[in-house]
Image (tube, rainbow, N blue to C red; front, top):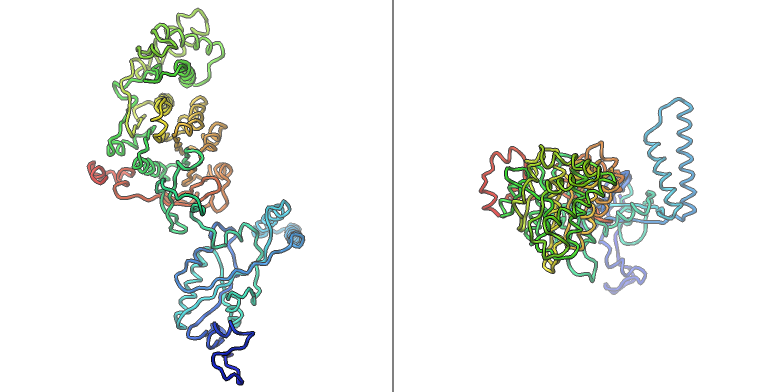
Length: 605
């Protein structure tokens, strides 16, 4: 045991005087330091130094947060020594040569390849490439922790807690046995590394280690106005911080939610819808499975049940109150899209030409022209359009009329054989497709989006000052059809100029990411939410969103309601949370619904 004590010089008669060279040290230094193999006794307390000897293979933002947030007294020192680029390149070259030599030696001896060597060789090759491009630099980094406590027993317990906190992030620490005095001085603000137990790191890993890095979303920069909007998405499981997100403050207001069945995507979207309604946003939902009906009933919304007895939609209706001169032209273009979806393909050029002539003719027969004064007259029906095609002398018109026969006089005619029976309006409109047969769901989704788009695109300043959110659940129904996907893409591009946002939700990732239009819809969404993914789809999702290996593992093993929020360079994990009243409106679990009193959720809101 070595004891070191601070004493006054024998010749110093003034107790307040001190040596000039040690003035500050004499003032702040402890009265004594007692050194043992396992700890230090510094003044009236105890201290022990832990050295970080093992690091995780991959780190994320704020990977030192579990240590920095440990509630006890802990001194953490990070010593950084940059390595010159020529030296770093030479060392990497030698390291890669050793890996390659090990590979060849194992191959010559007939041994199986060592997976650890293979992984290290791949990492070294990737780092060498980034170093050559100037995208990264190398540093020698030493990380040391000094734990303080009042008694020896408390010190042992505190060291065990710090080791456990480090192990939670795959950091391995070892005590600086017989070297606690150099370890203690290393963690003092003296810029001296007396232990010299270093590890090579690149720029990205080192930047994520700084206390300035955070697993949470960034706060506004100094001088920027404070954010006032947004909704609660949940809590960050890594930091227990609040994930609060404002889609209306982004460069566009669109979002995309991708997840496998049962991952909680509809639950999350219903919470998002409800919390946007709190802020006066008008919401329209395309609901294939009647999941939003309880929510609509609770908040006084409107429900349009397509396919129910007596429910009719006339696709030839002109927008009410729209006096723009190109209204008739835009309605004709939509009818081209609708006919393509009805037929399941784009008609040949001759049939498209015949269809265009018939559209103009059938409106003229109804007394509707480009003059807005005629737009209040009753619109023709789909059967009138088919009759006009049959009256055309062109053979292509007759062929098109025959192909449309099931929709005007056959099995699928119930939806279109009469004028529109309802014109939905209100702060929440849910378009229910549950009663439609599978063959009509794509058509029903398109008709619902058309009606929603007409409300979004209505002229007038009042419409521009009202925020509107369009939610398309199970969007793969529309994405699998080329014309339907094109219509959805148009809405994602043009909605921002009309103060509207599009929210696309799907469990079939291949239908969204497997087409150019689907990828365009995703790229036009400033808010991207990924919940649990299927192993068969994770590769495609990782390529599309640039996921790291850690993020891939997280999405594969995520629990219900856990996911990843991505917006540009901002990425954060979150866990969706809700109040009891919100849970009653959003849940679809049979066990929850069996005990649900229909009046409970309404009374709580």
